[in-house]
Every structure is written in structure tokens, then in C-alpha cells.
Amino acid sequence: MIPHDVVKKFDAAIDHFTHELSQLRTGRATPALVERVSVLAYGVDTPLNQLANISTPDSKSLTIQPWDKNVIQAVEKALELAQLGAKPVVAGNLIRLNLPPMTEERRKEITKIANQKTEEAKVAVRMVRESVIRGWKEDHKSGAISEDDFHGRQKKLQEVVDEYNEKIHQIFAKKEEEILSI
Image (cartoon, rainbow, N blue to C red):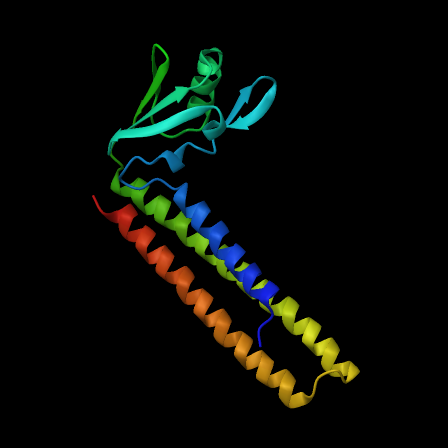
């Protein structure tokens, strides 16, 4: 009863939300922290993951190995500008990023940011819902669908929206646990 393209839009909102949360720092080092850092290389801003291999030798550090040693300085500068709270250290063809332990205050700040991202995801889902309902209202006014059909569709859509909001909440709860755990 719910159009497939609507479900795709809901899924896209969840995917975007998950990606946004993956870029927030938890107590562990993950490549997602830096893979989208924009590096000015070859005269173009390029995401770091397209210029280098990013790995985590342990839970507190990242190693970045650019495929072209000519961009090492640009990568180092981009990492400094990203304000990750860690100074990049160049060792030959490798850049090491040792992440300091997060303070309780910083954990709370990141949790607030995650909460904002959660609200943005819920708003995105609501906007899709409102768009669909507007279309159905037009169909109802033109006589293409009956009153009962309109209300039935609306109820079913709300059930789907509630499911997606619950998914968003579960993703946030998991991320919050990761952020707050020491």
C-alpha cells in the first residue's frame, strides 16, 4: 500500500543518518573519523579515502598511507584543519594520528551532536510523510481516491513512519552507548 519510492526515501534518510553518526568520534579510532576529510590535492578538494589507505593499528590511533607521496603535506594540513584533537605525525610515507582519550565533557558534547543528527533524521522522515500525504490529499480532492482509502493510507503510512522513527532511535541509542562508554 505504501509506494516503493516512499520506502526508498525513508531508507535514504536512515542511510544518511547512519553515515552522519559514523563520523562522530567514540572512544575508539575508526577510519570513518577521517575518510571524509577534504584534502586539497591536485588542485581539487578530494575526500581522504580517495587519496590514501586508512587503517586502525589499535583502538587509539589511525594510520594514513597516501598512495602518492606528493600529497602527504596536503593530507597532514587537512588533518590539522579538521580539528580532531590530535596532531598528525608524518613518518616517511605514513601519517600517524594518535587520538587522546575523550574527556567526559567532550563525550557529552558529542552526544548532543548525535541527538541533533537524530532529530534531523526524524524531520527528514516527517517531511517525506508530509509530501506523500499532500499528494494523497490532492488525489482525494480530485476524487481519484475515496475518503476511507485516504484515511486508510494515512494510517498505514503513519505505522511505517513509526517503524522508521524506532529504527532511528535504536541507531542513536547504540551510538550513544559507544560514545559514553570508556
